[in-house]
Length: 440
Picture 1 (spheres, rainbow, N blue to C red):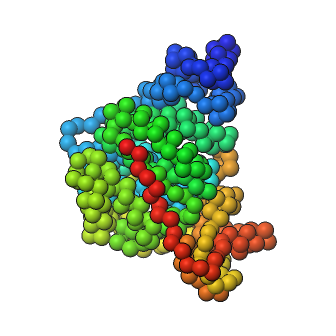
Picture 2: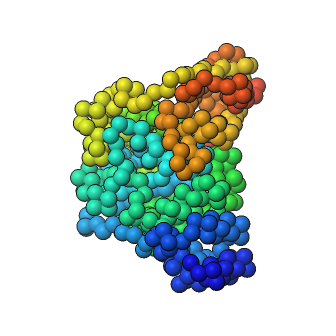
């Protein structure tokens, strides 16, 4: 990009003015065609992160990224829906939600991401399943959804390709938590899916990108406005992210917990979030008369095996041989990669679990190999932890609180951190609910 045009973009951002629509589209096209220097992209990202941009810029950026690639076209029939989460520790909802929704009679062409910052990526989790292919073309997505009702696919060069490059650079340049960049990134992909309805899970708290409720609400309102303005029925659920979700953290471990839920078991925290998001989507798409009826429908298909059958069909349609897929459902530990070492950690006093240092836990697991520090890093899917005792639960001295899964022996520093990554208090208390509010 010409220096004069590029500098005009930066100056507009700094001065709170609209960037030129034509220049935004040229910039996005340059990102798509790899004709813009990476240094310019990084400088633009850091300027956007520091100063923000106007609402008009967000709309133009979203449109430019959506039209930078293919869009999915659907035949008349069942509603087409999806959800997006801003990221959390142990957030494996998509893995259960897509097949549960398919079992309830909607189509789910889910585009998902890889690890971003300290949060795990749905694609990384699914790729811990042998032979599971997340690299599907738009034509493949339509075929799979028509056959089995759902698919979960990595962002690919065909759909919003400009966002793919920006997404990766945001991860390593610490420009993730910007409302305008998040809005354009998410909505460019979701509008390209040809959706009728979308639920956004916008998290706040110590282990979320949005630390406060106010920040989460601001992001939610931005995304809901752009989503509805794009013709998609969109709501946002503001949920707290102070403690890990469910019982399992880590790529292959979260597949294990997801399969537990698909068997009608699993931790209530995980089940309730899947039900909350699924119920909203069924209501938005007029499959259910209310949120409550939609939630009942999701709970039913998780219990009666229909969601599990849809997950099995999705795995086979996305490359998993049938015998391996069936074994995955019946005995996931025999199929998924496992860690070389496990270490148990125990309560050092009696009381009620008051907190986990969730963000620090995620960062430690990331450095141990569960996530990426650089674009070229290869994830170890076996790294993670399984929590036995949860927030507000009582523990006695010596009770096992969690098991850490790791690939090399722990350093003294790591052992010390994990020994002290949770706290207890003597008095019982009620844990905060996950759902704080809904933005419509």
